[in-house]
Length: 163
Image (cartoon, rainbow, N blue to C red; front, side, top):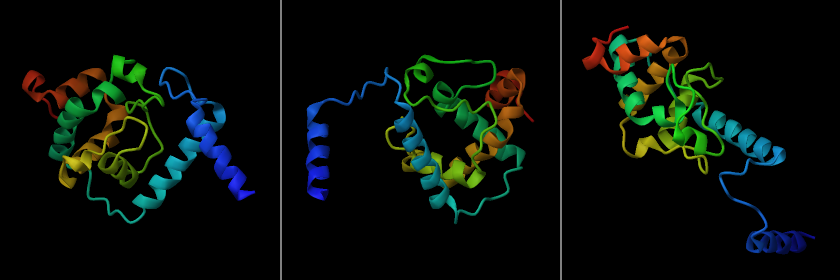
């Protein structure tokens, strides 16, 4: 029976039957399986991460500038409903201007390690933990920011940016 499943799996892989086009949404079962697997994987791997104090205004401001440079195209900012990159990704990246259900340690793990086959890069390959924590600190504030507050925080040279 196991051999039959292995052969069937190999035939399925080589058949080209499964459409991998990002323009075609996942089937409900595939969407559930991948999202559920990702959620529990992140939860398990972030469990031992110690969260620093995320209330420092300078840390939040640095995180806002990093978010503006690295994250806006996929995860949006206040006043932006979509971008070309956001529209083209499957699964669609979460709009981080809205509340989400990830704890700070989980956000850190996701930013640090990325998520396979989602378009989410592993920023820990090119950024120090300190920089990633700054983005996490900013994410705690992002859902409550107006468009103007975001501009002031993420672009201080243009607006004077402070929280």
